[in-house]
Length: 345
Ligand SMILES: [Zn+2]
Image (cartoon, rainbow, N blue to C red; front, side, top):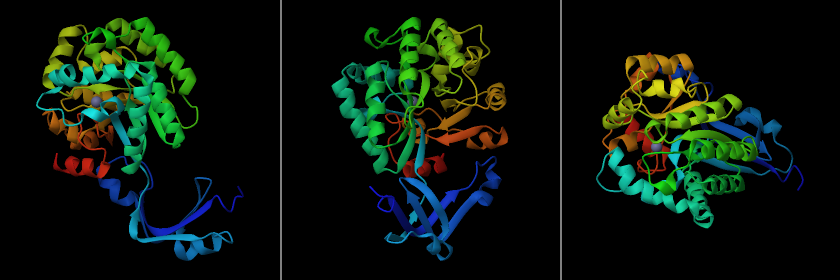
């Protein structure tokens, strides 16, 4: 294929955010809107972007311009928290977090020891993300290594960037969904070697949440993070009041829920904690000091009755926050729909 064939040019209305937004009041300064713009890309990478008037001279000879002046063109959405094995159980009826896990989630996740089944759901999942404009996502798989292989293989076919990992879980779950501290460590390590940084894939160490990991397993997770500092950490934190009370019972020697993760070396600039609906002040400070990030999942928090996330607090405390759909407790793959609910919260 010659380079001319691989060059595309799109004319339309463009909107993006130029830099990381540190504070809410700075958002308006960072938004870039080009009413009549041109984007030239080659082999999938942006070569030139700016106004149509200025851009025409950069157009290679023979490239046909696609016109989308009636549409708004934005960068791909980033979903900061989603479970691919829960694709088929969106809308499961009538429970809060802990009952919902036992009644619906664990039985659904048991099916992912079957690679063929995992492949089928992974394909559907990746297509749903793309259909909704999401090109990057931070994804929970199941405890089975097959689920991770299935997902990264499907993502690779579409050149998506997914950050994903095998769930680590060695207690308070059905026996067939449990690993051990040693097997979780060995399996995760093998998956990091196999997938992290291969193509656009990145790996996340993924303990489900503190109640389903023994201290021994969390120590193994921390050991992995120390050995591979550039991999991500992805887990749940302070979603539901019964869950928080349970963590305090299970880890009486720690200062609170976040301190469990912090104690085992799992906080940091590559750590993303889903929910954080009920953080205490000391935990907000720890999030800030460790440069950890929050995935705000409004449709999930509303669906499970977990509570209303205090978004203003992220600005006040200078904590990074992104939007997550949290399928399947969340109810839509669509980030615009998720933003809609975020606004109401
Ligand atoms: Zn979740």
